[in-house]
Length: 243
Image (cartoon, rainbow, N blue to C red):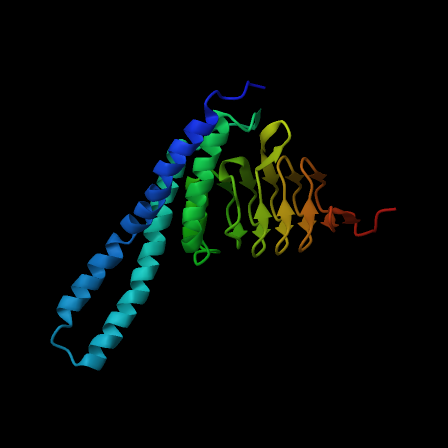
């Protein structure tokens, strides 16, 4: 493991000052298509009756918010695609360049959350996750905006990720930041508000029950059902209960 980065606190402070306004600027830039549409509709309806104009402008505001969601996800997805790391597993001190890089990606994901909450499940949400580095199989249904560290997550075909399930490819421990791949097989189900931690492998057709917490580096064999905090096997692949 590398040594702590010298001057980390200064670097962190300076980058924080630069990145905070950048986030709001990105939100503003994402609003450009909506603003142009609003101006266009405002000009075209200037001679309408006031109630007619109110309806038209109200509908425009709604469509404008949808356009903002699309633009926000596209802009953030492009930035994520540029800076995301390519790795299987890593462990570095908290005061490291990897932590800074991870922090940038986490910030971008937070900037995408207001839009992403309205776009899951959909092809738009899946496209964003793919741009951020998540590998998604055909027919997978991702109902949660909380798939974090997308570049560390693989989801198999026809798998369902339940509403507000949390998938984290990272954690911090005493020795620093840990990143490890999460692999979820095909035809699996991750229940509502379940939490999957770094390094977990979930086999094909396995089920993680709602609200379950899967500890780091847990391996769930194909077809099994796991539940609880921490999650344990509650049903074997053959349908019987474990002894």
